[in-house]
Image 1: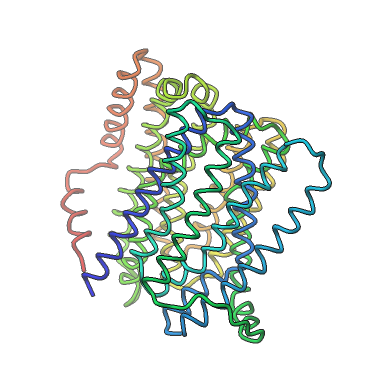
Image 2: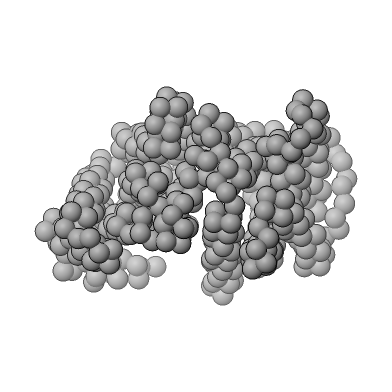
Length: 472
C-alpha cells in the first residue's frame, strides 16, 4: 500500500513539474515572439474556450472518478462519459461554426477562437480517459497522457523560435497539433494499459442517472471555471488585447509563484482528516503550521516584487516588466490570503462542511465579478488585480466569520504581521538601494529581521516543525 501511494504521488508530482516547466516555455516564447495584440488575442481565446469546455463537463468528471473508484463497472461509466463529451462537445462546436457566418470573411479574433477551439475540442474528447484512469488509480498512465500536449507544443514552438518563424498562424498549427496528439496517444495508451474496449453503448436511463448525480457539482464547476478567467475575458473584451497580454503575463507569473501552495495543499487534506478524526485537533499544531505557511507566502511577496522590473524587462526586452509593476504588487498581496483560505478550506473539508465551502466560492466569485465590472473600465489591469484581491479578501473574512474553532481566529495575526513585514521590506530596500542585487538582498534581510523582531520566527520552530511533520 505504501509503495503504491508513493508511486502515485511521484507520478502526480512529476506530471506537475513537467507541465509547469513546458507550460512556462510555451508562455515565454509566445509572450516574447508575438506582438502584444496577437498574444492578447490568443489568451482571450484560450480563456473563453477553457471556461466553456470546463462547464460542458457538468461536473460529470468528478462523479466518474468516484464511481469508478468505488467499484462501478469502468467500461460502462467510460462509455457513458464518452457519449457525453461527444454530444456536448460537437454541439458546442457546431454552434461555434454557425456563429462564424455572422462575421466578415477576413481573419479576425473569431477565427482564432474557432481554430484553437478545434484543438481544445480534442483535449475535451480525451477527458474520459484521464478521469477513468484516476478512478482506476492508474496515475502513471494519467501522467503520460497529461503531459503529451504541453511537451509537443513546447517542442514545436522552440523549433519555430530557432527558425525565427513565430507567427499567429504557425502558433495555431502547433496548438492544434499538440492537442490532437494528446487525444490520439491518450486513446492508444489507455486502451493498451487498461484493456477496456473504447465503445459507446448508449443507455438513456443510465446517462440520465449519471447526469442527475453530477448536477450538484455543476454550480461549483460554473463558478470555479468563470472565476479562473473572468478578469482575462473582461479585459480582452472591454479594454484591449494589448492590456490582456500585459495582465495575462503578470497573472501567469503570479500563478507560478503559488506553486508551494499547490504542492502543499494535497498533503494537508489527509493530514487534517487524521487530526479531526477523533475530535478537535490540537490548536497549537495548527497555529505553528499556519505561521510557517505565512512566512513562505510573505517571502514570495518579497522576492516577486524586489526583482520584478529588472528581471522581467531583461528577459522580455522591456515588454512586460515596468508596465506590470503595480499589477504584480497588488496580485502578490493575494498570496497570503490564498494560503489562509486554503488552510481553513481544508479544515472545513476535513469536517465535511461542503455547503460552507460552496457558499465561500459564490461570495468570492460575486465580489470579484462586481469589482471587475466597476474597476476594469476605470483602472484597467490594476482594476482587475484589485478585483481579484477583493474576492480573496471576501473569502478570507467569510471563513473567519464561519470558523467554528474560534481559537484559530488568532491566526489572522501572522497573516497581517508577515504581510506587513514583506511590504515594508520591499519599500525600504527600494528606498535605500539602486543596484538590483542589493535591492533583493536588502529586502530579504529586512524581511528576516522583521520576522525575528515580531516573533514570527522563534528558536524552537525547527524542532517543533520537525516533530509535527514526523507524526503518523
